[in-house]
Length: 417
Image (cartoon, rainbow, N blue to C red; front, side, top):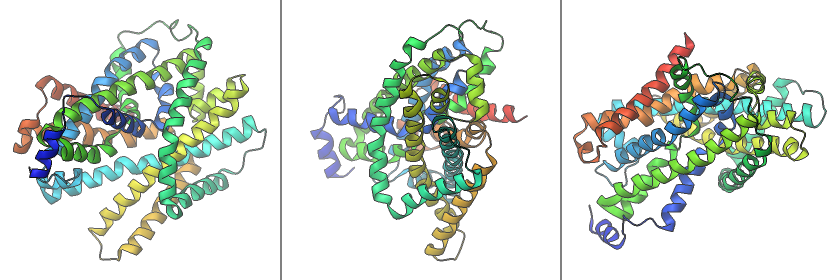
């Protein structure tokens, strides 16, 4: 560790939780809160009230243990400026780095496809149910929406990133307000369903992928860990543990309150209908709720959440695909970037026209790769990489983290059978 880092470390107290630490918690929290949260109540509430309680109880520890392990993985690199890709290459070589890059692309790219379907269904539902219009042909509506969002990314990247960052906290405030607003509509229909205790483990098991997807903030962990290492040096692990823990608690408190409020205000049949219609829970609430506020605010919030999430994930998917092709092709970077852009836009448009189940795509395409990188890779490194020795979490934490990752992947395989 160089003298600058040592000096910075001595000037800061890693045991004290500062306002800057709180802003980092908000940043991690904001990264996780996106369009996935809008579909979480539909899946998490499908199994009934008591499985939802169990999911709420395990959501915080599984989120914290996984993200703090990934942060420790980044901190284990020799180079203080190393990001997650550099750390993977240092520990597992170029082959390992290629595998992780490949997996990371396929963790992000399906999310772009999901948002292509989501934005089309949200706008179509709004036009038909709130505006009283006829449905626009799906190929035309989806093409126009995807082209407009992609144009925003390509021609106004900096503006879009600023807009996305600015949208996060108003979205959070509106969702929190909506959670309280729905309290008078809470009913006992969800709790009146007699729980099948023998089926409870499988219900929880099959819902874990959507929890992994909705609580995931791994994209920002690399930069977050580097910054803590720059400021705190060897004591950075204490700080990353504390901040990721704070973010996990905030996510559990806010997101699960939103989920419970929505689920308790609807019946099991209504949740099933929302899943069948392939729309977010806010769009469904707008269609069945008498309040004009929810009728118009719900779809607008869903539109903003999906759009803001699309921007960040499109950039990540595009950069990942360019990196994959560039390492295996002699073409110029400019041509690769254009071809990658066209590939992502065209495939997103095709999937939006086909309109597959959004929850099905989350479970089968998005969550397994996220689980492999976020839950399994750090635990594997703790066992196999000497540099990770001092960053090991306790054995029970490692076992719990690995089991959650395995559960997320195996539940997808089971669901496909």
